Each structure stands twice: as C-alpha cells, then as structure tokens.
Length: 239
Image 1 (cartoon, rainbow, N blue to C red):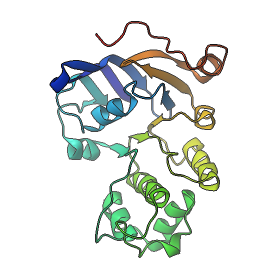
Image 2 (cartoon, rainbow, N blue to C red; image 1 turned 90 degrees about the vertical axis):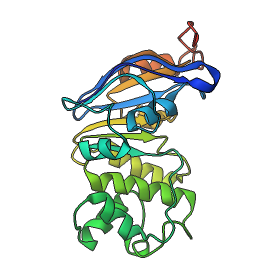
Image 3 (cartoon, one colour; image 1 turned 30 degrees about the horizontal axis):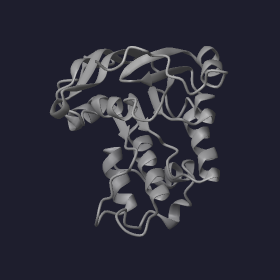
C-alpha cells in the first residue's frame, strides 16, 4: 500500500504552496488515476512521491515503511517505481542495458522482448538501439514504461503515460495497466485521458494544490464529464 499523510510542498522562491495537505491511500492491486486542470499540482505531487522534490512536509509510506526521508534511489530500492512525463535520455546506453539495470537482475532476451512487446514495440528491433539517439519521444516513453515493468515495483507512479504515444500503442498500454497480474502492486496514473480513467478503481482530482475530490470511478467519472466538467471543485485557493 502507498499512503500519503498531510503531504505539502512549497515553492520557496515565491513563498507559494504548490501542494497542501494531500492525504490518500492506494491499496495493493488498486488503480488510482489522478487528474485535474493543468498547473493544479499533479506532476509536483508525482515528483514529491518519487523523491524528486526536496523539502516536502508530511509522511509517505510504502507497505509499512516510511520512505519520505529517502532519496530517489532509496525509494526505488524500497519498491517504488516512477516514470517521468518527459523521459530522460541516456547517451551511450542501449535499450537492453537500460532494462537490465532496471530489472536489477539478469533477464533473458526473451523476457526483455516480452516486456517491450507489452508496450507496443517490436522488441528485437530495439534491444540493441541506443536510448539517447535514434528513438522518438514516444518510443523512449514506451521503453521507460517497460523498465518500470521490469522492476516489478510494490507501487508505481506514471506521470501522463499517454504523452507522445500513438493510438495503437495507447491501446496496448491500456491493456497493460488494466492487467492486475502485471501490476500486482499499487498503481498511480496521472492522466487527462478518459480511457485510462475507465480502468481505474479510484479517481482523484488535484486542483489548486489540493486533493479536491476522490472516490470510486463510478462516482467521480460522471462528475468530471457532466454538466460542470472543467470546473475545479476546490474554492479555497493555494493560500
């Protein structure tokens, strides 16, 4: 289980709270989609969970272990997976080498090919290619998702996994994220895509730095796409 208790984060240069008192729990096997308007704090929240934003207040727990005091490497070792909105390019590293490092153990080429095919890549055409050159943004995005799959994390956070992905590959990703055998741990997806929300167990709305609404998909989805769609349910501001 991934749990956040009163998580807040301030942009010190502007003395502005970007996140305020975020509380949520994502159980093992649960799919949570976090959505909301641009600039509402979703990506900041993802980076705070991953350990990419220093100075956050509150507590972050993963399967009974408090991880908010750990750096990004320590959180990864504790079992937290994270995929960037804009994946990092690694010069001089092949797709196969990157995936082997992510897995933390030696995987056969057949296993690696299977992981890549799950995210819509013709695997044997990619293993020897360099991550930093010759791959499109969408291809690198899919490779990054495959590396998280390879780690088999206890909890994983994906920041807009659909970004730069073509329609055919997006269909494959929906199948992957919806497969509980592939993702037995807690899964957090940050997305504006309704099709990803439709496979969620829970949907949360992040608006003006707060968790403005959260609940079962059947309860939240009609609110998001109803008559008042596009309106932030939080009126309190960021203080």
